[in-house]
Image (cartoon, rainbow, N blue to C red):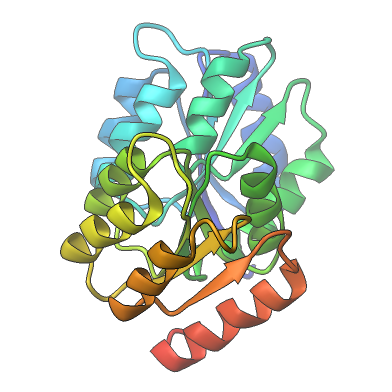
Length: 249
């Protein structure tokens, strides 16, 4: 049988683990299970997994905290969060940290298989960060780039973006110029010190107001500036061009 993917299921529901393991095993996937975050972390230390399905509501240490620890060890692992509860704050935190997405219980097995197959492609793609305090912009980027096989992390302010850049080596970073706390130029300059190889693209909806900051960013080797509302088709083409130049695709 052709190898498909190595999967870790993390859920304290023993019956769900057993049923999912049986179904996915029959479809040709290699499946391992864990009932707690601590158990999952120990397993990830021992071997890499292509995709991890992580329940958000775990005993002692929740799924988001478990994911944060796992991504420090295996930053290229695709993690899909699962929940049967209304825990929107934890869902949003997981997505901001770079989780691939969220799936709600009871799970549709065909959807699960589709996620696994998409995740296999995404695991091979470039790592992109979007820095913007507008949730709509972040969602558009995540949805479109994920479908094209890119992995996307989201930060809603400059401080968070800098922290993320210290933990992962991003290939491309899209930075809005008008951010809370520190602006896009300051964010870019700080990230540049951490990861000088990252290609940065600045964005703004305020062409005249941000003109001086944009010019300064370009003088400091920002790739280009794009203006909102964004043409996501053109943006995607630019991502592909950047990765070709970097030799990453």
